[in-house]
Structure formats: C-alpha cells, structure tokens
Length: 326
Image (cartoon, rainbow, N blue to C red):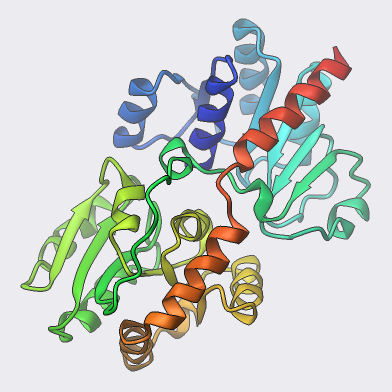
C-alpha cells in the first residue's frame, strides 16, 4: 500500500510507474492495473541474485530513472547490484538493520530524526524520517470533510492490515460481539489468508459486520469513532483521518512507535499482539466510547502529526537527487 501511495504521487507529478514483484494478491493486481500502474511479474526468489538481475533488466527496458525497493528480504547485496547498474535507488525501510545502505534516498517514517542507526552503518543517503514522510494514498490526502467527533464513540473498526499472521481478528471480533452497544466493522485486507475467510464470515452478527478489501478504506476510517489495529501502515492512515486508535504491536519498531505516540496522547498502546487479553481490550474500548473529550484531543494531535503530504515531499526529494546524478 505504501508503494501504491508513492506511485500515486509520482503519477501526480507526471511520471509513470511499474511494480515489479514476485508475489501480488489478485485483488491488488486488479487495483494496480485500474490505477494505471504497470505490473511486471518476476519469476525468481525475492531478494536473491537472480531477482536483482531481473529487476535491473526490467528497469533498463522501461527506461526507469528510479528503482524503489520495499521489503526486508532485499538485503545490502541486492541494493548494491541495482545501484551499481546506474539507477537512483530509493529504499523504504523500517528497521535500519541492513549491513550497509548503498542507496540514494531512505524513507522511514517510524524513527523520527534519529539518523544514528543508518550513519553508523556508513549510509550516505539522504534520510527522510518521521511522520512528515508517511506515504499515504490519494484517498487519505483528500480529507476536506472535517471529522465529526460524536458524543458516543461506539462505531468500532477492527483491521489488522493487509494480513493477520497471528489470526487475531476473530479473537478481537468475538470479544466485541458481546458488547451489544457497539457497532463493529471488521475489515480483512488483500493478503488475508483465504483459508481463514470462512471463519471471519461466521463472525457476522447483529453488531458485527465483516468486509473484505473495501474499495475506499479512507471512508471506512472516517466513519469510525475508534479503531483496533496492529500498527504498521494502517496506523498512519488512521491518524491522518483523525480516528482514535488502540494499537497492538508485532515487532520492536512497532512497539517503540506505539509507546512514543502513547506518551504523547496520540493513541492507546495495547501492547504486543502475543499478550492479547479480551478483558483488557473491552475495558479500553468502553472507556473510549464514553470519552468525547479524549477522542477529540486525539484527533487534533493525530492530524497535526500526519498531515497527509509525505508522498509529495518524497517525490520532490527524489526529483532533486536524480537530477543531480544525471
């Protein structure tokens, strides 16, 4: 989704975009094509030497000026091969954990302005860090309608991102199904395990509605008073929409981000997904339902933090750097 967000901004600036990938869910493939993004399949082990060579060949065939790389499987050697072929390379990163960073531009909205994790590994790339560089799709940049902070915040969104590896969604929905005053919308993303889809369908009750891959997630978020998520890109989308967030975490970076934002009053940190507790969740949700003032305060903080123009800033930086290299 963040690659699609960057594609939108690049298109808006007059460019063309191709996604080269080995694994793309069918629903996402259809969306990419509908939005004018070329799709090239790569038949190679993602991140391996053959993948790097095929990526370079495709970029040359397309006459690409930039190659954007997003994914932990693409290590330092992969980056070096692509950049060594003469392309400008933009890395979308989360963990700052690679051995070295042979790229021109690094985008990491999670680590604020702390450059040390990159610089100590010899990175000379320009760093675009912090929420000012969150990559959001067009639908999240079009927020002219002011959010209504309802007196009773009982419209709950449950979404664990594009996939749900821990299968936490049914547990959350089951916990909320017993709270008859809540209106719960459960959203499963494009990469949700098809084998688990039937289990989700069974969650449809009087107060729980299950939706698969809605076409306009921004509207779903706008219509919700609070959301229960597992951090990641969904967190930034919700903050841009001004929705109150209760966030679980799956890894050390997400934990650090959730804790930092919780200290600032931006969200409610629910801890790691592996420590999920039904009682703790329902208590937190009910407290938020009755707290109009707190939700309003969270909305103001969130939309100040994430203004929705991160992609435009990234494209502007890329255009400047690529011009210099040429």
